Image 1 (spheres, one colour):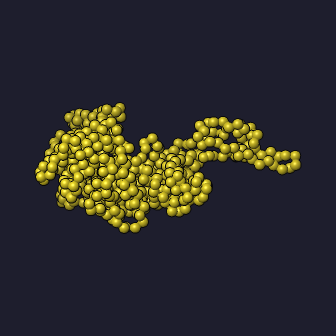
Image 2 (cartoon, one colour):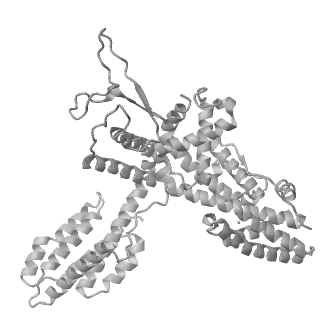
Image 3 (cartoon, helix red, strand yellow):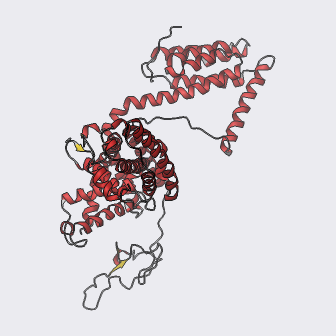
Length: 545
């Protein structure tokens, strides 16, 4: 049979002040990076009570007809937003219970699932479907294993009968045929016809009844079709299956490989349609989220509760820093458009040091793992840069212009400090102890090799103490480095042009890492703002009302 591959996929004692002036300010060759290089209160009105509900009596605050023919104005009763659910307010009877149907739940869940899948395909270039790996210890896994094994045992028993019983074999061939047909593309007309002709269920049934069914013949036909359709990565596996002679093992391997080929085909399709999905995903996500919000509104649920809290923190922070721009207190003035931008940018920057005690905003939850990964990268860059700057300040001029040594030191310090971003202060102190020992050894080797005066005992002790002290979040150099990284990322996501952005002073050695961090953050933030920007603008405007 013709083997024509069909379409397929396929890094003297010195004080902290010395470090700022000698190491940070004197960093040689300040670099710039182009944008292109980074790719309440609620108010319940008594008039809202359903007066026709037989289970609810009239409220004492409800409008009543007076003798002069005039009606009283309904009384507005403020309820604290922090009041626990179910609190009874004097004068207002309980509202009738609300019920949510299973259909409402399923529609909301389906919309969110579709939006999440679209978002992953559009944002994650490496997104791919994978076979679910199971431990085999769950009840479901054990039951599945038992049922499958029972099928294959029965198949073997039937084939050993005299004459052979092909009942289970017919079921198997039907499943294999359906699996092959599911792999075909619309243009595979000839191959579809060929499969229909060869794997003719009626013909095979007749052969089985007459005892002349050649199972191996059909197995090799199936394998030949699979070889024409499969991705190159499956070629070796198919060659291995072709050498099998035991029927149950042969068809078991065939079905397992067909399942893998289905995944390959799905991932191939995703890859082909990704550009189109990326073009439409923003509008699609807006639409799906709007539907979600409408369903939440029907249930009297604020679908953006934690998004409001997130933006409120930034608004309050800027309000204290710039009272003239935002007013001394909320409601003192409207928020200018430029200030809306500042509030949102400040809110995004908060994600770089996100407090896990806060609930993640609803509008960001789809990218939560990506934001937390970037947070870890920022923490790592801050720690590594702090270690390097402290080291430079102790050694002084011998290393100022030796980029090879600085790069070597950075790379190895980063290896030693892997996973430090999630360490407690005590754990980080212990890790930095080892880092300090390594740094001192490397610096001594460098100084001796280049005929410089080696570090004295006092200098070694000073360097070791200063590196260990970086474990404190209040360490002055660490704070300076962190703030400069934050400002760099802020400049990148705030800029509306492709003008180069200068790498922070003293951090040129981390240019590659900072570029990667800012690039990833910019991509996610830009996409998020395109989808949810209108919601953010309305929420921020509410703060000034």
